[in-house]
Amino acid sequence: MSEDPQAPSALALARLMLTRDLKLASRKASQLVQPLAFFAIVITLFPLAVTPELAKLRHIAPGVVWAAALLSSLLALEFLFRDDAQDGTLEQYALSGRSLTGLLIAKTAAHWLLTGLPLALMAPLAGAALGIPNAALPGVLASVTIGTVTLSLIGAVGAALTLGVRRAGALLSLLTLPLEIPVLIFGARAMKLAIAARPYGAPLTLLAGLAVLGLTLAPLAVAAAVRINLE
Amino acid sequence: MAWTWFHRLASPPHIYRTAGRLTPWFAWPAALLIVAGLIGGLYLAPPDYQQGDGYRIMYVHAPSAWLSLMVYTIVAVAGGIGLIWRMKVAHAVAAASAPIGASFTLATLVTGSLWGKPMWGTYWAWDPRLTSELILFFMYLGYMGLRAAFEDVQRADRISAVLAVVGLVDVPIVHYSVVWWNSLHQGPSVMYLGKPTMPPSMLVPLLVMFLGFTLFFGAVLMMRLRGEVLLRERTATWVREAIRT
Image 1 (spheres, rainbow over the protein chains, first blue to last red):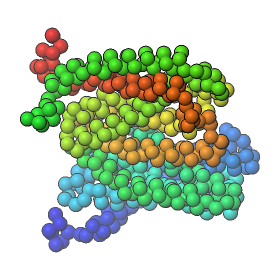
Image 2 (cartoon, chains in turn purple, brown; image 1 turned 90 degrees about the vertical axis):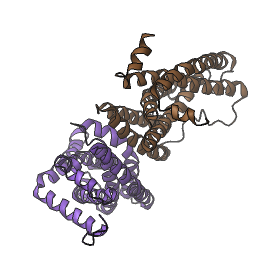
Image 3 (cartoon, rainbow over the protein chains, first blue to last red; image 1 turned 120 degrees about the vertical axis):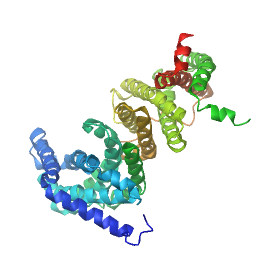
Image 4 (cartoon, helix red, strand yellow; image 1 turned 120 degrees about the horizontal axis):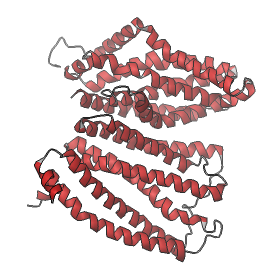
């Protein structure tokens, strides 16, 4: 409890959570690589299915990159709570007397660092392969970086809701994808404007707004859902 | 006591009886209003100067669209009440409402695309309102899917309530982002409802239909709520007695 003078402060606790999750993930690198490989494969399907002409691919590139990012983030959600729920760690968090919401924010942040950020770093590569001009790649990077924050937060809600459901894959996609549509719209819009060499600050700001809103509200829903599922 | 009605809401047999007693009070006015609204809308109202008779599908389409949103709000608010005050009836209302709302959403989509064929020349156009209605339909499916994924009714109630509340926050964001997305791609489609100058002969039947559909929802909700209460209390002795009589 908080009366204990030995107890770490909230910030120190968040840092502990973060290092723990990063360390755990580094021991299971394949879990991190798979969603990225999935992202790359989905991107590869489009030139094969539509056309190899870069000039035409450029038109659909924002949509392709964002749809692939959404699907890949869905795939990565499976690892967010599953192991911690199975070995009882989540239960310990809930019983620790510390704010479960705070702990889960730290956990979601670790998840974003492990899945969202690598995806964002890979997006310009995928964009270049789809014929996006080099000048527009910073826009691609920015839109996916900010957008994946919201994807991680909404995804955490979906993962927490389906914590007790076996083989939740299809259900999880039905729960999270509709909620993520604004991210898709604004993210693809920012990319499209970047490709057209026009200012893309406005949709980026809206994306950031969504991220802030998600950061404010989603952890509450995640904590509520985790508590209900642990009962 | 003034508050007894509130405490009795916690009693399933009381809910069962009350919902049964209220059903005709919703059903008959709903039937009368819908018949009156249909006569008014399909025969008495003049044809539209642009759309001819095609616009008349709005007498079904618009009230369905209104209910698709209203019922989602009811599901979320009832779920929130159930979460906060641990009120079982509220969860039963949410569970009973969701499939009705999904049906209204589907009706909106079907009538919208039927209207689209003569107006747009195609059954489906990515019109912002139809698109956000489609997303709403997916949200209903997700809600009902999540509910069905749990065997424990109480857990299903509370988990799906969290989803509904999250969804309620997101519905306006989805709606406006879709409207904004669409306005970038094509000009605004025919604003068949936003027309400021709808003559009373067209407007009055529409309002009658709105009221009639809302009461119809109330009647169906009461019937489904009875079923939901029976299902949840199936091991209780009062249920056996209630079914026998």
